[in-house]
Image 1: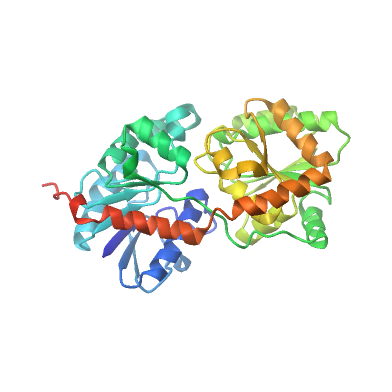
Image 2: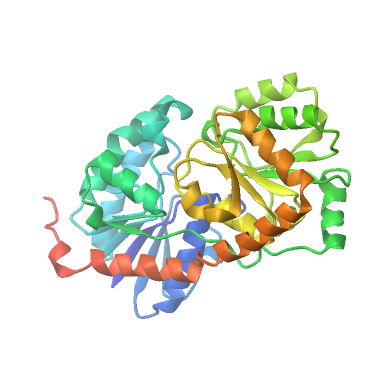
Length: 383
């Protein structure tokens, strides 16, 4: 087979959740199936580290897709030509975007529908594009992959899709996430929080991640206790971060909040392993990779009882309503004050993490590819 893959989000030192999904699944699939050819489509200069094996052919396709109008041009007018040129058997799109102008079977990975449920979190042109075109992509798709049972049901209900057309391909975490010994933990704390223990948030700075609510909760936690703990926020800015800055400016304990920006993979592994606990309380998640990463690193997890997160965290997390900062603060206080509880949560976390494996994810995505390329799924190329 010839499989053309949308790899626009494979950006060196700028990988977010979908980018890591691409790295972990595509690297395994291309190496496991040398008999097939993979055409990776980039929209700008690519890093050679993303050409995972000899059966991968990189293609840079102009223009760079940095605006909804350019997304339309790229997918509907540039991608079809590539599919014809390479006589593609499938177009695989791990970020969910499809071409509406090809008859080649297409498999999008639609990670979540945050834009349907929280459209105001995004800039207007992006929100309008997503809500106009993703329902069309879902109808056009030969099959759909998504990252949790919760997202599968949401896609089926919101877009009126037969759930039998949707395959669940869970996320996972790298084996590099591991517990640190006390000496290693202290070295990381010395580097980031003046040697103090810290609660950790990891993710893009974005309204649906509820960082403002986390700041309110942390302020209440500090006011309730005499603890020396800090809050470490790791991630790059995305959209509408003004509320975060405004909230921080009003905090009495703002000096106890540390923003690192985006960090490298090895640095992130260390930051996780030295944390007192992960505090991940978004309003909406299709999966929530930081939850599994924290479990791999051997730290407790405080997370939202919302959307997919209970499915991912199971009985290994302490839950809070993301709309109730006092609940988040209570969970922080409970975890910080009870070593026995922390140890129990860590033990449960190790067990829960074993349910998620990138090897298994790659196998499930490959199985979805095989279903999408069955002969009965072929449709004629549009004139």
